[in-house]
Image (cartoon, rainbow, N blue to C red; front, side):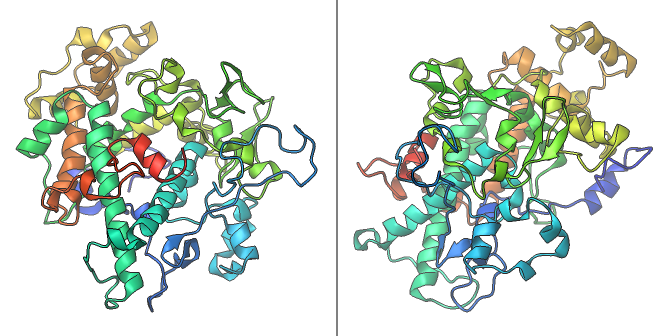
Amino acid sequence: MSDITKPNLIPLDPSFVTANLHNLRRPNLDLDSVYGDGPATFGHLSQDAGFYDGIKFRIGRNTDNPPGTPQGGGIPGDKIPPADDLDRDLPRIGPLLDAGVIQETDFAQEQRDDSSFRTRAFIGDARNDENLIIAQFHLAVLKFHNRVVDWLSSEQNDDGFDFPIFGVGFRPGNRLFNRARRLVRWHYQWLVVNEYLKTVTMPGAVDKVLLGGPKFYAPRQRRLFMPLEYSVAAFRFGHSMVRSAYDHNRNFGKNNGGPGVVQPFASFDQLFLFTGTGFQRDDAGAITRNPFLGAPTLPFNWIIEWDRFDNKGSSDPTHFARKIDTHLAPPILDLVNEGNNLTGTIQTLIKHLAQRNLVRGYLLHMPTGQAVAQAMGVVPLSEAELRKDNSTAMNAALDQGGFVTKTPLWYYLLKEAEVRANGNTLGEVGSRIVCETIIGLLRFDRDSYLHQRGWDPAGGVLLDNGDPIVTIRDFFKFADVA
């Protein structure tokens, strides 16, 4: 329904969209992209069993230089501490095939014929291997789960709770897996609400929804869903926060105050090389497939150093996301991994993220920013605010399309953040949509942490010193990835 590559697009009737467009994935923050259908160790078949090892997740091994390779030869760069830990990649199809864990016949012929087949991650949702930072975050969640299993296995952490899994009775392994998965989900959900949302939305926005409940979000026909105002517009604010280059680690970033061992930074395009899709752009601008530069798994020199991303007290401005505003980094306007099987105008559209967002909003008949603001009782942006600090071309486009009074919602929310929150957070309308959707999903999901008699991280797994996990830095530390 939301295919924007069709010619002569016209907006769909809103009632038709409401009745027929549904979430493909579960929307309720239960980490389905991590857990998939669960392990198949208790008499229950699961197509995802290959990325489980019992009730733990399999972890991929990084590619290292052969023994005796001179310093700087082969794969260049320094080992990322702890230097002897080279189990810091997602499980990938090639090694799993070689180990006999999965079979080629488990995959369609079209998948097997793809040149990147063996380097693709075998995880609950392959889109989490789209770029290296997301892939390494998915790995952190896998390792966090494995640590939780170990933590719960100790006798002193046995709380006695028991839940059935997949309807196959109460066995010790079932019980432990369920308890581990439940705690991982609750820690994740608590951090999303109490650290992430409080960082990207206006002060007080989270607490107003937590304490007063959502005013606009509610399940439809008793079903949880992510509204299009959220998924097609508001939550795409992150596209404006992406950088063209990152201080990724000591090899591709900064090293002891100077340039990295290999490069002074990791470019946006490079972060898409070492993933299952692996496209690259050469010096002439041509795009070719480049699965791991010949390595079967993530090379050791690209392991992320999370302290460059999770330290809110850093004095280095490049350790922070860009502001939320109407300006996008150049690579976002020519995506290296998108549209490579297309040509002409359609390829340009698919590669240009801003065009994609605007055209999809048009097709799905999204309400304008002004209409949503008025529905929420917020004073809409004025014409002067919509024009503030714009280029001449941008203001001409606003005039030509009549968009000064009827502004596409995605663009409107970026401009609201830019002029009313200085780009440091979403504005009032954007904050309300994002908070109401995420917190609303958790409030109406009986399995979320909000329904567990006041559960908070003090009732979950603890760091070695006994502290609760209350920041993403704590999360990485418990997962042994920082």
